[in-house]
Image 1: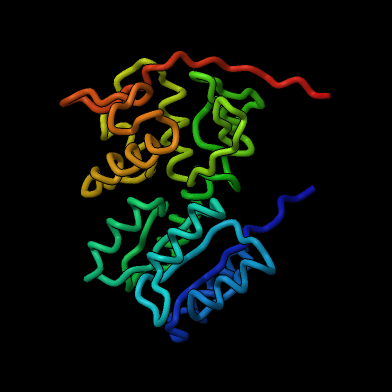
Image 2: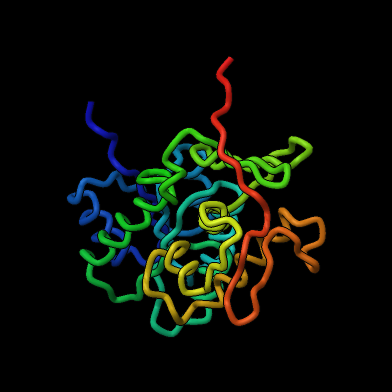
Length: 246
């Protein structure tokens, strides 16, 4: 049985860019749905869930940053920003809130296809992040449990805690290397999967966001500890187990 084609949602208010790009991506084997603004994108998401969203930053009405936050926090969708050269600050903000990558306009369509496939290899449509995550085994640490296939994080009381794609990849990276110092460059490479040294603060922001979800007191973290001058360390013991099937 052949694998189903990758579904993309392309959100850009410039029809002169959006329509030719959609045609090109369709010829590359992707199924492309178009939206001219964030409102139309939200409507499209109610009808069909894509595998990845290509998202312009500057749009009339709701901008791409706001829509990206919604996509990564509530729908756990990978996002690639399509940005203008002058939007470097917005790109940084986008990466910090969980976007997976960005390309700067004007761009070579082949580069965008390569970025799409790279992101999909790191997310649900491709290989799940982390070598251990490809199995059915779950992680357990300090009473928390993570199902890497479903990306389902459960706290010690049994409550599901939503996490974004970037937070999931960061957590898996730490869980795969417990009680080891992980420097920022290594974490950035594992979480972003690209040469993004200009955005090393994105790792710090993702750590802060993850701490607010799993620490009793994020201002005095016990699980994800800072190693000054070195990076971060997951201080908890990590166990792997395969849940029983009833």
